[in-house]
Image 1: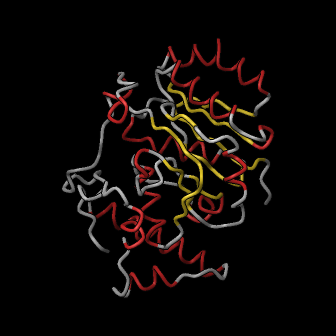
Image 2: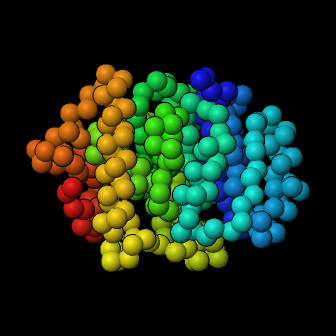
Length: 273
């Protein structure tokens, strides 16, 4: 089935106005082909500030730009269920690529959409350059086939880690020449607001079943890697990396370590599968 658009921008947002405008309008202004982009916004039903801003200001700006957009409302799920927002937005999209975007992200590359589209047809997780070239794809870009194969994109609020670890384990991670400023409070000092302060971070306590590193969460990612690898095999692509991981012949984090040029992952104990 063909998709109507080339790129779907998935953007849950809460309580931000100026930052959201700067992020989304700036992203669209740096695109080469607005007709090929679909924007999907996620807003909480109790976010009176955000909804009013969208209806009174942002909607008119998007209309003026002529971009296709959809705003979906959610009963508040909180940061710990960020993946549920993104999965729902993704399932409502119709695009070759799904681009996870943040209201504290600033696109720096003109023609970013063209750089993504050139990889259409590849079953890869694409990664942009951002804050010291973190080895994860902080703003993941995934092909539609990923959603079709797995049935969702992520099962944890740490969407970037979830998708990146899976991509590394089946050797389909690819960095592209697109640069993004992540204007997050702990990185730049900006956007230190209630949305940031009230985040529930589920990492650092592996005894908690909801923690990213709990064995149950790791097992779910292994199951997804099996599905991703089956897809690679069914489409005559190299599936040997994950097969060798399971045979204990391959370090699943070899590529991650190669990409961790600034040693940003040394703080975590990434266990081999």
